[in-house]
Length: 399
Length: 137
Image (cartoon, rainbow over all chains, first blue to last red; front, side):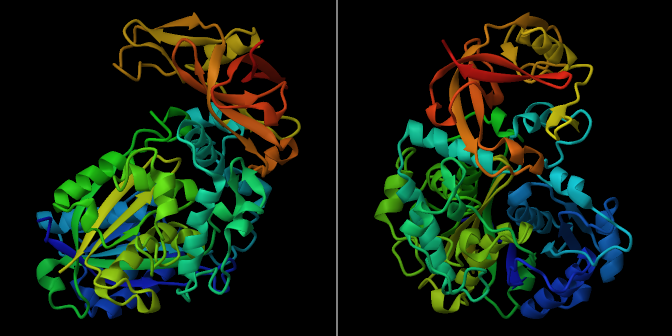
């Protein structure tokens, strides 16, 4: 049996939107998210004694203390997690581990992604936009700034495209099979009113006729960047038992990384999720067959194929066949990303990664509505950060 | 750190430890550090990424290798690169071992394949020379 020390007991999630009508400071977003997630879990704010964030726009230094001050929280565990798309999954296990060792009991985990109110006199200008794609590589001394950026290896899409290209050459997978991942995700999004593509199903032909962005990846195989926000509440098993929703234990977890830029990945088609997932499954004492639904980070279609293989759900090289042979729909034989994934729901910054966790929690708690997977007790959720770099795997089990 | 060419292209700002690599490119030579125990490594750094030893030496490579993977960028994710699309980015396994990154030049982007043999090409942009690759002859 896996860990039973800490459980997710509440969540809140805002519908991702391409245009956000209500700009707010990150701290204000956290305050609203905190009020919502505490209400969902029926936990008092005074019980919170831990905060996990990715950073705080209004306080680039001393971020946790600035947020504790803003929220009026006396906090014993204060963590900034910097793992790209794997950040939310990394946040959840850190919160659970901190609770298990006894340094805190109830932890707020935040992933806000909203625009700030316009700053008087400020002009970000084109340079700001340019640097955004560099992911920190623009600073003095950065290897990325000297080798990857001048080659045009910026943003994320070309890196994942090279993984797809290599995979196709090494193992063979058709573009139509990759397209099916996007199509099944979009099908699931039709049962999620929060999804940015709710009401907009697509077909394999739609994906195949969308334009190439970075060969072999096409537009409809790539997430839509959005604004949004989400939060979850993690607490001790003892406290969780007195919450209204079924506690969802963080029963196993693993994390692994080797590189920042894709150039230095030891093998771009054998990703670090392998070791993260092996550790998570071993810790949870759960077999792959026992998983009732999977919630896999899906910034691109190729990410899902590589994760299905490397997380151990099929052998290396068999991912294409696995995708062809299974329905990945919420009403299919292998439910995956039942919320629509980020491909169907939109990528609200780090809220995109968090959506894989909130959906797994909803499913295990039996509150996924129309898209509920019957008798869902064990979920696999993971996060992929950067250029197939940071990887975190979670096993989430109902009490 | 990057700076920008006169036409807006991002260019490297060499550091004390990487300067010999870029100096080599300007002379049409591909030089990398070689650790006596672990061989060549890329990118330049003060200590070998295998053993953290500092007894490496700069040495010249053949410039020949094979394409490990590549993509043709048709979007120009960096606005400064939008004028260059479509352009090809390749990861190249050099014959001497290390994997490096560069643009494919002197070829049609549609002719590039995984596993094709390539040779170093040297692309001058303003005062900087970048490492690129072309199909081997």
